[in-house]
Image 1 (cartoon, helix red, strand yellow):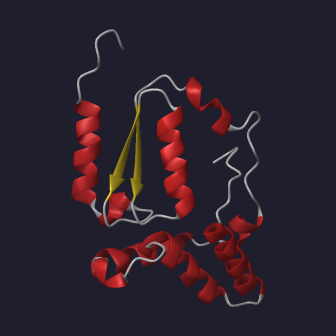
Image 2 (cartoon, one colour):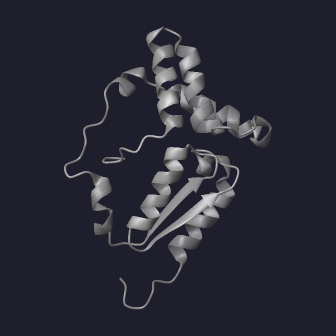
Image 3 (tube, one colour):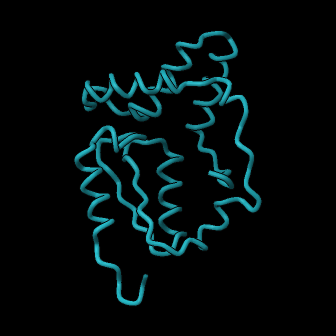
Length: 155
């Protein structure tokens, strides 16, 4: 997220190893390292992951994996988005998996704290793609959020 500069030790170690593998031509190992981080979740036992989800998520990841994209970071917004969260006026649902990276869990927490009217929901036993990993739970959470009555005086 534009303006987020608080890198975790976990994130730095992952990125350093990922780049070492990629620069050394070990593309499949680099891709698998990314898949484990984003799809399995850091430290989560693979036996807790639905094998159908794991297989499908890896197919999607392989189709979208791009060293070229990683080599060219996105241009930072000015001012950074993270410093403007208080400007968001609409109700906001922040949804994160409990097995996502330390940085993503922290970003989700900060979003929920700094966006007025934000609601944080953490999906148990999910990494970076709770919508694919637990689609029924995800749909129920989003449906409840979207259909909840608006507080009096808000439009």
